[in-house]
Length: 624
Ligand code: C2E
Ligand code: CA
Ligand code: CA
Image 1: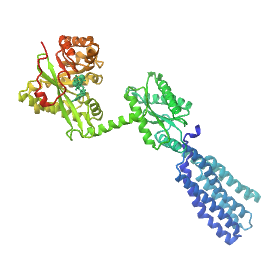
Image 2 (image 1 turned 180 degrees about the horizontal axis):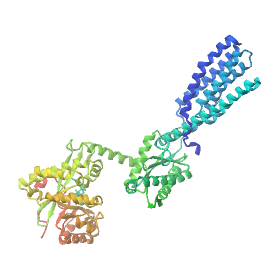
Image 3 (image 1 turned 60 degrees about the vertical axis):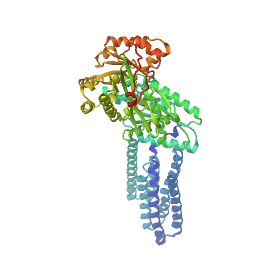
Image 4 (image 1 turned 30 degrees about the vertical axis):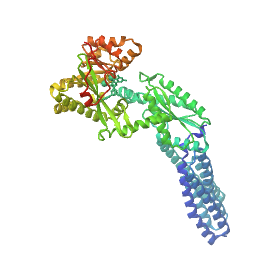
């Protein structure tokens, strides 16, 4: 129901402070009337009235304490506000009693007092109640009215003039009060809303979420909360400009707003291209989840529809993370984290999708964070080591691929296809890659000086390393430090085909520079990416590695068509071919028959230590 929406325009916080001001004003001025009563009047009336003021102040004090002590949800706050309005009204109106009492007396001093009292309380009400517009107007009119009547009853020219003045004064009070209200309203609105889309902003979101959670905790029930992030919005912003980006955001917002309103939910903009939707309350978890999913589904569809922005026809999709809010003892931050985890998982799974948060997902993310944290200390804790997997050349000599290993004290052995992507995300790959390179060069030199026979050493290089500004200088320095030119000619850098998708031009420039230094290149995981053949001929590579998945397929289907095709392409382009993941004799034989140059896989050897590699002799497996 709509009442559950947090209405920030109610200024609960503001009005609760005014209670205190009213109490202070009442209690500081009311004793003066006891004094007046003592000198001019009967005293009994004043004492009775003073007791009434005390009681009303006590009432106000309790309302205030109630507000501060109890964590109220919006509904409870509304009830509280209604009571408080009554308190404020009475607390102003109690003065009119004394006004009437003194106005009926003969002594002129008492008339002065009564007038000042009534006009004074009118001014107080106009100023202090301005955040409650209707209450302020009602009270001011009610308080000034007796003054007007008083002057009219005098029935003298001067008194009619004073009556007119009091009307003017009332008008000014009403004007200033509504003006203050407008200003308060506006600044409050701005503090809680996003300028561009007029949706509630992050602050609104946090308060709303906290309120919803409070309500769920006290009354039970379920609510859902969606985190919506547009996919590749940055690209649109960067390529078409911020104006187009802004207009797109406005349009996306209005589509979401419409849909959310139909579903009794509220849309908020958390910043940039990130939005959130918080639902009303359901009494059943299943219903809640079902509603969340169907709304998410509709959102994805609506967002994906074409946008016409300044003659651009645009498309955009979104990724949505879903989490269900319930009465368990979890705070807003935790729920936001959960939705965030789910949303990132949706991004991770290829975007344009919906993921519901679950405990497994959170474990996965926690592990990732733990890896991220511990990885940073892996080098200084000496947890990183290298293995060398033999590659068998057609002349029955050996080469090797360097493979990194991380053995962590707490987490144990973490495979490189888990931690390398994380190192790439955090940037740690630069440091790690440097270490791998240096250790590999040292080993290469050591082997060469020991007279160990080997042809080539392949080192995996991350695309991030390749594109790093200092990389070429680093390699140059390392070569100068460790390798002779004959030794450099044994070095191959492996780059993966999938990484080619980005910044090829830049990559080619760097590859050429490295080639100048004597380094050769191999294209790893060939066949899994989308490089076209024309593109392939532009790359300064001398070797292709057939991806393991094709060798696996050969093993499973006994059909070598793809493998043979790749071998043909490579031969035509005068590239050497490495087959990795060779596990069985049949595969080995097939590859040899089809003139594959280099073989690598468990059939020959697992990745092994430096010492093991030194003592590894390929038995005469290859018949040339
Ligand atoms: P990759 O470059 O494709 O490495 C080949 C992977 O296949 C290695 O896994 C290797 O142990 C495994 N392998 C080799 N022969 C066989 C086989 O016969 N059967 C099976 N099932 N697997 C085989 P590893 O060492 O776990 O490395 C995984 C990935 O991690 C590598 O894939 C590479 O992308 C990355 N990586 C490993 N070391 C480094 C490194 O030093 N630097 C960078 N940037 N990435 C690395
Ligand atoms: Ca590799
Ligand atoms: Ca590979």
